[in-house]
Image (cartoon, rainbow, N blue to C red; front, side):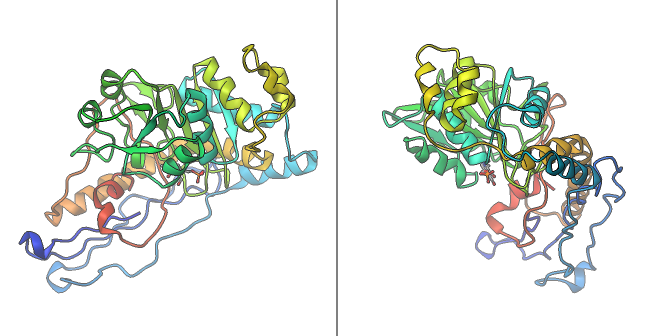
Length: 363
Ligand SMILES: Cc1ncc(COP(=O)(O)O)c(C=O)c1O
């Protein structure tokens, strides 16, 4: 996370003190515990004496985000003695069902990483070597490597001036051909899915890795596109340590994604499309299944998501207040009242000037 901003000599602006803020409150130790930290944790020293130097030296808090509920769930799984689920057993079903409940999509499919879920989704919607996949330059590198893994190539498209997300206008004027669009809801800010869908008839895969719980115009992310993908890697607002989930309401996308990394036994039970049934013998031979321990941890983590989102919003409000008091030369993306920013956990204490605007969107 980075909340730093400074005037640039090349722009002729007067150099200003660098405001910094603490990371959002850590996830409560137990998912059943209320948030105890107030958002008023930002410390800003006297401006007149701080020009040109860092004002807060304390490290970002890194409180463990796993609590009693996660520990109990892990112990129960260990006692049960089955940590690898080749089918859709109760613990895998629980995390998948939790994601259909979160998003309203008809299907959810678990993976061992967000990257694998993106790979599977892109395979599911038919991305391939015949045409590229439109991607945002404002994302994590896995969103690009997943395109390559799916046998396609990235076609970069501009983001909006007012948000870190794909610009529908730029998409409409993008030269060349492409087979799908990968739209990242960067730093929890939902992309304008309706505007994107208005300018392309091609499938849109949502990368919701930063945006668990985000809502765009009254509808959860992960339910807008042909598929939605959520990373459950540890820095995310819902963590399984590692893991990923793909959501979709398109049965064909679901079944194609299933063939990419799941066990033949599950394929045999679930594949209904005649064209895919032969895959039940072997699958595509990747191994992308979510470990049971990741599934039980993430299922518990999901229960704590509303609290973490509330805390992130409180910190964001505080950060905006502080930045405004410094007359900082930035704008932050605004959401209409029917949209909700997804929560993300703190990732890093090292400031990065290039991430100023979007980094602040997650505080
Ligand atoms: C936007 C985005 N997409 C995809 C991923 C990949 O997720 P994973 O690390 O679970 O493979 C990440 C992870 O940081 C991400 O931030």
